[in-house]
Length: 222
Image (cartoon, rainbow, N blue to C red; front, top):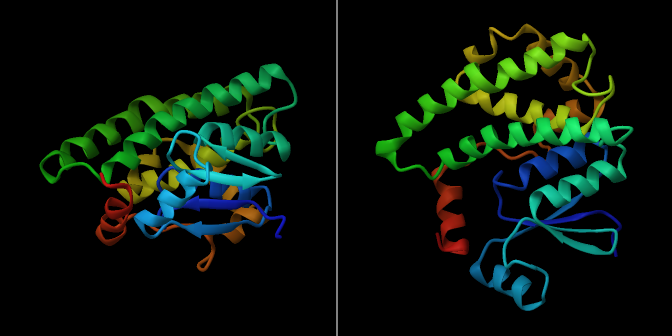
């Protein structure tokens, strides 16, 4: 049996992509078991693999973990990406929650009704340039270091990089007023493990299109 983490999800970003990102940034190879049919999901439920009857689910170190934040916390702790002490961990968690708030808005965009999409995009742009990116620019300016917390790579840097790439997909000009955030994005993108994950052919998922969304609807019945 492989010692690699095994990720169970459908073939899209969703709430698994941040887990893929964190494993890749830590240099951890992982396998994916794609949920393609309703029967695949039902089998996981019947086998007792899904505590709350939902995915993402990751099999790692003999455990079956669900709930995205719990999975991220375990990976970050295991691979020393969660800060050196309680204070750094608190900052990392706080920043990560802010990133998750904006990321959730972007994730939900794909299932937003067409007549509401323009307003949703407008709100995302407003929150990006007036709330979230100014906050991270301020953090970087306050300490003048290369990373958000403790002057070393942590999970929150990776979460922010992932978010920035999504923001650029919506409107690349949104990053322009934030030079320190842009510089951090560039530094992170050049890290060997990250650079590898950014290359074509990696396990990184493309934007969710209508086909992927329809497949997900069939499996998850939403």
